[in-house]
View 1 (cartoon, helix red, strand yellow):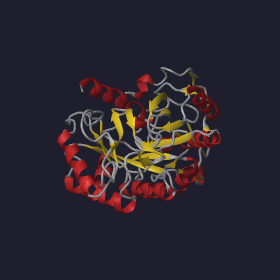
View 2 (cartoon, helix red, strand yellow; view 1 turned 135 degrees about the vertical axis):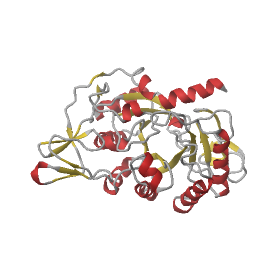
View 3 (tube, rainbow, N blue to C red; view 1 turned 180 degrees about the horizontal axis):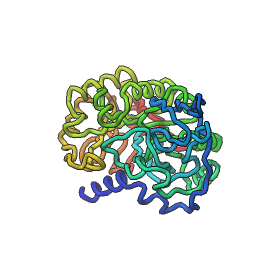
View 4 (cartoon, rainbow, N blue to C red; view 1 turned 90 degrees about the vertical axis):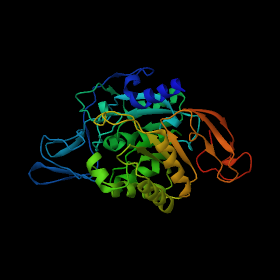
Length: 368
């Protein structure tokens, strides 16, 4: 059990360390790329409308995310074509448990984020400036070619916040769709409606962090807003993007049982009872190193609350060896996906149906 736990911690906390271990890339020399979704204002200022912050940015300054800069009245992305982290991951690491289980995802990220989560597990790159972290030059076309060469059938936009490298993600996703490659993202969901709707036709699946379920938590712990994230979840469901949710349970911060119940009821009523929910264990890091890891009993209690609320697929993450990492048929209760950490050891889903009783198992199960 200990070795499995150490593997969880390594993969979740240190993706950038192994970023370029298996991929041949060149140091970054990419030029800034003009951003999408901004307005030019008087006196040379611009307003970015990519995310709910709607930053007004004066000449020579950057937005809240630190990677979008006003240069002579035009807004530029400083990270287009400049990934700082590249790696081949199991799709289960995203985590996506109902999308091409057992497959590999070519994962990438750039520096930057439009939130300031005190509990961020990748703060070394999400809270960094482009000048602070080594990046490589990789055009969208080159990314797609590397994905083909790797044998992966999925590209995952992950590790940091994909919203802040929207233009790069969008162009890669567009090319990948033409090449028959699937696109998935792990995001905090803090994005405006128009850019999200433009991305959805090229997005096959998403895991969204629903970090808490009250405005004060979002304001104090992330500098974001709950309603914007809830809107994103509704749009993804409406647009037919396969959706899973991750909720990091932080002891004494967002683990109140009644609040957990309200969140689960909202998911059931607005997204559907068959939306997978991943309850993830907190590990002390970034600005919350003074806290303790989430007690396993808190995760088990939250999982029972979610099941009692009617959710059909509820998982426990960042903990090995406990019930909550396998998938069970909602009808006959048989185990249809057996997992050991991020590894699928047995799969009993045939053409989207339980191999034992024939009931539908929600997700995207086809390998080909």
